[in-house]
Amino acid sequence: MQGEMRTYRGACHCGKVQFEIESTLDPANRCNCSLCRRRGAVMTRVPEDRFRLVSGEEFLSLYQFNTRVAKHYFCKVCGIYTFHRPRVAPELYGVNVGCLEGMDPQSLKVGLIDGAAYSLL
Ligand SMILES: [Zn+2]
Image 1 (cartoon, rainbow, N blue to C red):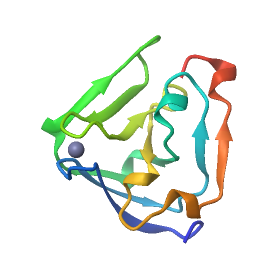
Image 2 (cartoon, rainbow, N blue to C red):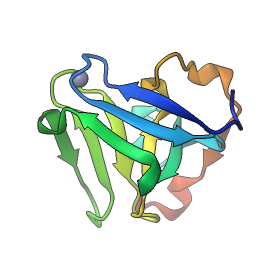
Image 3 (cartoon, helix red, strand yellow):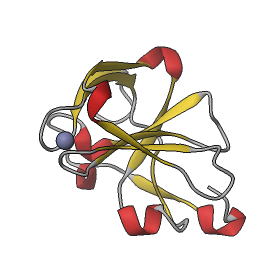
Image 4 (cartoon, protein in one colour):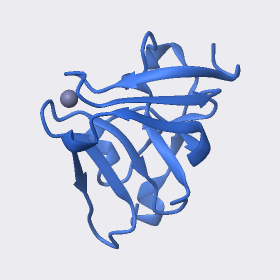
């Protein structure tokens, strides 16, 4: 349940990339920046020590644009965005909530980050 700290297992669609987070999933957000509005994922952020890449590092592709500070990772086999390092908070991991086992993003209270307003995410 959102708001309760627990461990979630995450994976891309094909399962090559596996990760774990410890999170409350609160807040969960969508973003309207140029990348996120295309990607459409619901995301939540966790500190580095609450994120663990379990397997599949060799299947990750990195996408960067603009200032090239943010690091957007996706699985090169199935194409699914799994997690990223945000430009405005590179010490955190932004995670695709839809990759979390048993988690339906539509069951969450989802906010909006107005990434378009600062245009450089
Ligand atoms: Zn995959």
